[in-house]
Image (cartoon, rainbow, N blue to C red):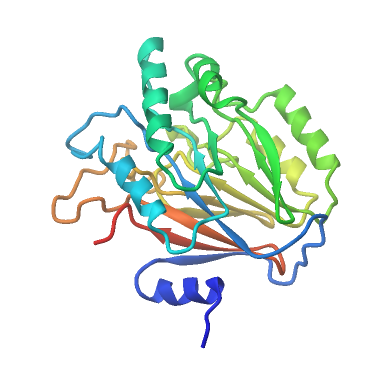
Length: 296
């Protein structure tokens, strides 16, 4: 029997990788563009430049290991996306650019050349994204792939954690040009909903973006920032956060502070990882497979 990729992912999940099915089974996606199954890889929160042996003694090795793991995937993804905090924050503009340059050099080791980048607040909030744009271009953009419309929203360049009126107007205009039943995937760094505002796990005007998205029945959001897998619904819109590649953080409001979880020598790289997202042509459905930084 020959297995297609969707069947393979479901079977491989039985061997250890977690699969999360996202979507509305009864909701057909009839938007324009050639539609077919595909998958992409999401990586997030690499924090290149971080130094903290108590939470990751391999801080300079984790990103290269993740690149090697992606390169070793049996079936190459259609594209790869990094959803922010590529580098760790620094007040020094020279050091910020050095870290962005080093990250870009390491990421260039990915065999797949179709790689998209988004900033996190560690990359962009101290200079409103100026250094980021020197290396990666615009902080928000759209692209279409096999019948799915992708929208990358910047909710980090503003140090007040806002998307801002100008970008919201851009989003409104972009959505107005899409069929109501278009398949839309939103990529962002911070959550668009109020997950834990006390921990900066929110976007101050994120509700306005969600309101603009609500008329479209086929919307899914993938984000980073909270350093853990998390799934949430706002109405019919599913929001999925990705694990970090540097250190995990505690569950939302599970303790007084959002201190990083300490490194466990008995279980190195525990809580770290990246994911495959399988987009099915039939309906707005996405199979999510969580993968480790490296094989056990």
